[in-house]
Image (cartoon, rainbow, N blue to C red):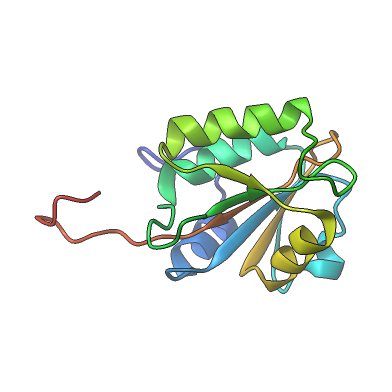
Length: 148
């Protein structure tokens, strides 16, 4: 156990988050997502739902503020104009942990392509469909810069 680190972030996931560099992306996907097929690296989060994993990751991972869009979600049946209740929960967590960042819906193929290029996929046991999100890692600014 560590102080101020969410307990559900195990050693493999903490190592992965620390090893990622600025601009690398991490996908957190539901239990139906073909993670092993799409991922260069896959970290299993069996028994965990997407929302608590996203919340824990955003407690330790800075979101990239060098780009206009840094958080993305999948879409219902590939239509970015349609959302599911889980997408509202994703937006709530992101608004709390990464204020100022919009969650951008991506059409099916665009989302899949982005996941395939991601640094790592976290495969949860989330049972809800379309419960997938991608976060682009930012930087940790040096002390005294006025940025956090």
